[in-house]
Image 1: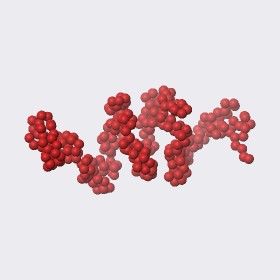
Image 2 (image 1 turned 90 degrees about the vertical axis):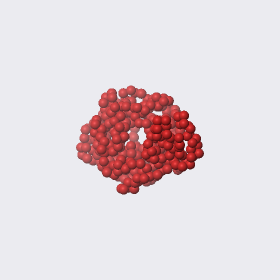
Image 3 (image 1 turned 60 degrees about the horizontal axis):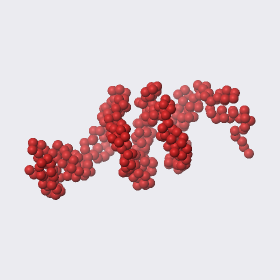
Image 4 (image 1 turned 120 degrees about the vertical axis):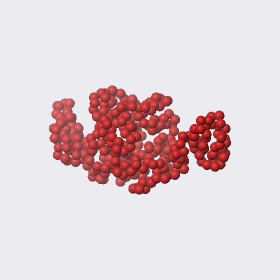
Length: 348
């Protein structure tokens, strides 16, 4: 029995003593039934075929044999057909339930679990279930407190590479994802996906209590609290309770005065991302919200809602003294002064 390997080690496989000699990077181990196994001499992972070992070996050598003839990006394995679809926008895989299309079969499989509610991956510590293995891996670090990725600018640490990349763009202001309909750019692919639904009106998340549909999973979670009235998140400073962790995080900044979102034009800082987005439109003059009756455009969604009441004549704010109703909350406050003889705005 002979074996060839780079290092000078002796391997015991089954009951065979296999001696190593400095010859090749591939260890070929004959077994009693003449079964061939190929072992990586770096990590010792085993493969049944030499071609599989060669593919695997490139993850150690970083060798990239294949390059895209459109953008020049290089790959270590034959991912070219999948990558080329990022240029051609081809999406050959479609969901047979909602007909959403995907460029990769794996992405379709993950999406399909939205409909089936399948969560095949579970945490062996707390038994929480996940639809994707990558999400389980990220979750597991909440138990181990592992943060292997750190920012070389601010030294903030992250448990996952994806979170690190998202954070890094807050320094570079890079926006690599753009909408193919309106060409708006985004720093996160998830934000592009959510934005794209404003064009398609797709609402893949529905409430199993009242069947109301939402374009974002987070919006469904927030809505679900209106049925359960559950508020599992509480502030450890003032003990105020919230149905959503996002709301708690935003509230907590009223104690810390933290303003993590800054405008890359004037450097003004904000505690909420929505406030930054609204402010940014003062620089771009963008008005993404339009009235479907008269087509008047607005920079903020709240202003559109107020304007829309001029068409519906809706007056949701009423005085608890005289029952007079108003379309705007500010108008109600001004009206209150007629009862209290207070002047809401005074000038010296």
